[in-house]
Image (cartoon, rainbow, N blue to C red):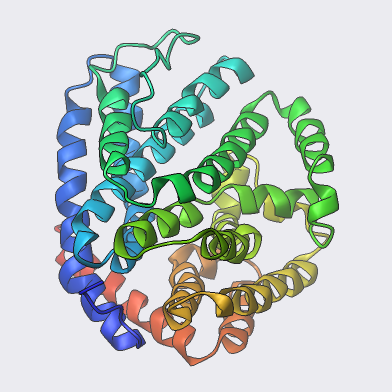
Length: 360
């Protein structure tokens, strides 16, 4: 691994702004151009909306490319394609009128197929009316397959990739069906896994399953260094459940008002009150920090963890929540100075972006 993995917050942010974000922008431009050519207006709308409104998912995920050494551009190419599938399908399921679990399952089969080089592409839209996407979803899946096909550690990491993607797909199916079915499906699903995750509630387990960070970590490490089975197992246990859970719980935390207006499922709504939610977020912060210590480059994974807290709490939506200011203060205090650094840095970056955006 010729490229050095940054060991300080300042060096990390320097590489993110100077190297990672420009490459992410370049890749997203490619997929935006493809999305604009989608024949079906509804599919085109959702593809473009998912890129426009969820760009920060790709930016955050692409930080893992720093683990890929000289293959960092290939890592970013994979991360952007895979995250774009995820965000696109989430939009399709969120705005679906059919509420058909078989449709959702078939759509998310694309995310499993993307992790299997050589797997034949399928008609992922077969169970819905809107089907003509001009090859957009197939192109995303093929891009991931091609990159993984050159992955020297594929045999070691693939079982973990498929496990994480399988959990993600299960979640997306259960959370997008008819409202009256969602809780029963999610609680029954969790019952099958409860013995292994007794410290989690059903909604926390669901949140842990909703992140792609573990997949990006595996793929990037697989490009940058030789992996063995024990290390692969350590990576899996370090990211699932706690790092991924922290990621998605923070995501749901900032989206509470928006999800209530849209009628979308939000796992933070199931906490008894804001105090219990705060205590559980602090628990996830503590367990995440503990779980990444066994990994190589532990300081990098700590920075990702601290960056998640700083990034999400810097979102302006937090200030609109009733307990927003108190939550920011409490979580930043628990996460330490690095989270405070990322928090201030992201706020400054967002203000700079707003200042540069022309008023239409």
